[in-house]
Image 1 (spheres, rainbow, N blue to C red):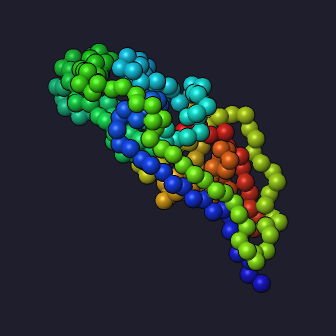
Image 2 (cartoon, one colour):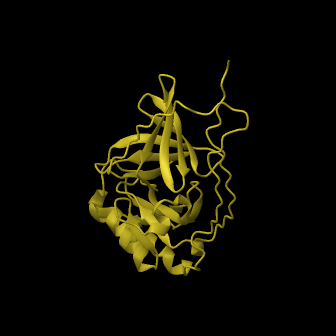
Image 3 (tube, rainbow, N blue to C red):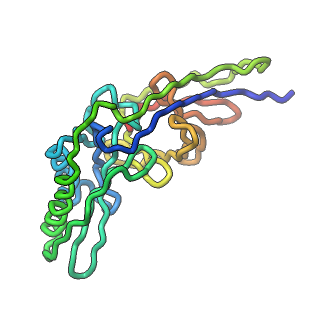
Length: 244
């Protein structure tokens, strides 16, 4: 007899705004996408300070953040920088994206012709930062422009109850941090080492997850994140201390 189990029913209703003034917090990664090193040329630290100068509450992914945004990825923006260098000129711009990867604001390119890269990148960053002067940013109190209603895990009528869910849950005290990538996030630890990758679905709090040789779902249940997958015919649910 075939058994079909309904793992969850998740309904998300949201009101989404593209106004930069809807966002109070910006998360700055330890490593920008154009580099392989953390805080290359101290650009990450300088972007964090620059954002604070213009009124944003900017945090590194490893920082302790307020409870109201710790587990709500769509109530904050994500900073990155992009470059357009040539042999003679270093050019960078700052990009702020929402939780879906959509650009909410980007600066003009700042440029420098300095030969010393650490000087050139920081000089170009300062030039790019002047675009915030024209932005006139002021948080409007909307807390990210997102309201959501979630209902979770309801057994379908006439279905056989789920009895083989593993009761072993990963309760490690180590926090993992989500860094935006194309179509989702990469999850890193404090090193930072990539632990797993999450890929967006049509539901905001549901991700297709790939961890080593395991494929499953990462879902939010009552404000906590879980990685669920099948192993030897049994459903395994690992609790994740995950910060977006």
